[in-house]
Length: 226
Image 1 (cartoon, rainbow, N blue to C red):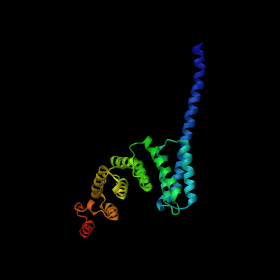
Image 2: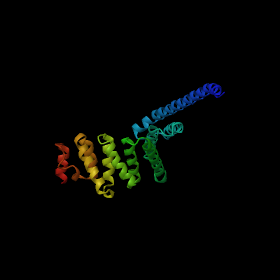
Image 3: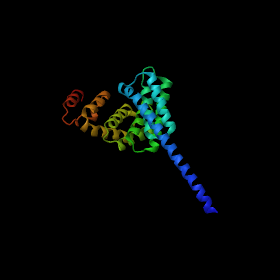
Image 4: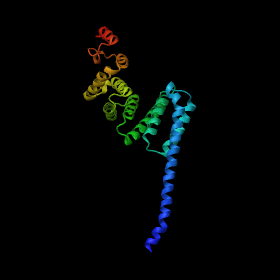
């Protein structure tokens, strides 16, 4: 009797399983379509560091739909966070509106990192948001360390880490200052022009002079400032 019931229910279970797989596949495909659409709309915004408000809204609608379909996808959260940072940097976006956009971006980066803990770009994006908010706290220090640990040779990671570290130098502990010094030394070997531009902006010859590696522009600057 039991065997007969099982035999009858097995095809039903298989159909249900197939339907679940199909629905899941459709959700993923639909989310991916909206993600691609959001990227396509936002690409000129990122390239120009801003643009039409309507384009921001369209891109946000698409990535919002993608996240509703797949709420734990780290790529979607990273993209959404970056878009919010860009929107917060636009002329006229100030005060509470800017802070709310940056806080929302931080939420997306934290969500991404809860799934993908070793992705350096999520860490450095979180660091960038904390920097812009002026929140030099435990999370800032943690993001600083994790950016260095997970992306030691990534150009943008290095430069953002150095920039954020120098902007808030007086608020950093000794360990964090040492980490920034190490990043300056490492990055100077492979991208001296970019590192020099950051160092010069903050007026910190002590971090590179004597370690300029034959780069004449740095040597001349050191001679004139030290």
